[in-house]
Image (cartoon, rainbow, N blue to C red; front, side):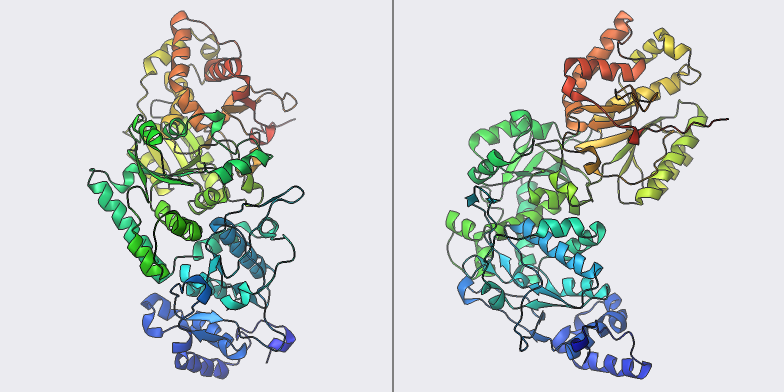
Length: 628
């Protein structure tokens, strides 16, 4: 009745009697919508709020439900029950948006369009019930670039066969918006006269946190989950046979196929392939904190790992595991799910992005992730992890961060119980400012020296701070430097041995932090506003970026009280950096470009490799100075 007026009808303005009747109707029609018996007790309690909206939607918007969907042109992939389908009216039916290309592009497209529709309070979201099973982009146009690939009967299956349609519908309904699925046959019959698939533009305009919420609501279907769980079980069996555990591993997404290298040849950025053209095994090894060793790598790539690559990783003490080479994903599981026969490259090519979806889900269960930040598959994995334990072997920026502002950096502090007690209060204030701005959305680390201050350690834990026990091997060397440091002797703060040690603790940050970049903050720093990786641009430092603590007009690095760190680069050069500091301590030589730790950083990284030492703008190091 309200559809003709373009209103969203969720029953909000119904009388109590009408609502009660609709609630009865909801239960009466439960077999058409969502079986009440299948709800957990928590979800049953929400039936009057959430289920009521869906029941009323089904009555007023003429939705229909089906228990099976098959596609004659896609080898009859098994589908999930209770899919909410849009019913065709006299004007036909069309999806609210279209999807294109591979797994990650499709999921970003769904999430961005749905998020935007919720934001703009669209009366209706018509989701295309299609998943492109092979979204590999091979065609290139001189003017348009790499051409988008759209769904058709030969390259796709129903979306609900792969992902849980009910969970997605529920999530949208909780935001007060109605949604249904345009049937598969309708979607694949739509022609595409242009190459336009503007999911990236929609992503930029959408609310970042809401888009991430939609992404997290897109979960594997029941039938597809069986394939994933069997694969994870096979991986666990393989690990246990070698006395390994899931926590010992890394998921590596390595783009090295011919199509990717062709893409990189026309890519306008600076980081499409392996960083500095170095072997990927070396790059992965440098992304493992030495304090938290790893033993194996789940290898996701465009092709099976070669014997040369296996030996390369073995040289770093890492066992490489591949889904096909080590029979982690069994053909029989896919045959049962896809309802097809056949094995080998032909099957894997035809269902390329279904294999990618299995890999993505397995990868999500593994503690650490290393990917390629130009690949949207990697970007999606990093985003869903909240940036936790994530890095990328191509280094530098995440290009998608300009469109999707959820890529946060971990914040790192240092602390020693040997420092003056007054230093604890500024650290607490700084941590509280970070939590006020970011909430629990970012990781905050403290490199902590000592173990006696139980109350402070308890306070850090209560604020979800990750504490790393620090026992610096170089503490006696630094104390010798303090005694010979004229600048330190004239400083009320640095003349104290504990305070001086604390300023040097940052040189060991790369030994503990599992990230591509981290922002070090001194204890007296207050965070005023939110920032993401995008703030640092595509030319983000290859080593370390420092600001200027003395004048905002001087655009030269001089202070290490706030430092943006390329963790793998600093880990790669850590031993050489320590030797460099030891030489100055032994020779009682001052650093040329400044006192103490900041002089060491500037001398070592600035003089040896000018591109590894950069200026960090005044936005990240402003001082409040009173006048009068």
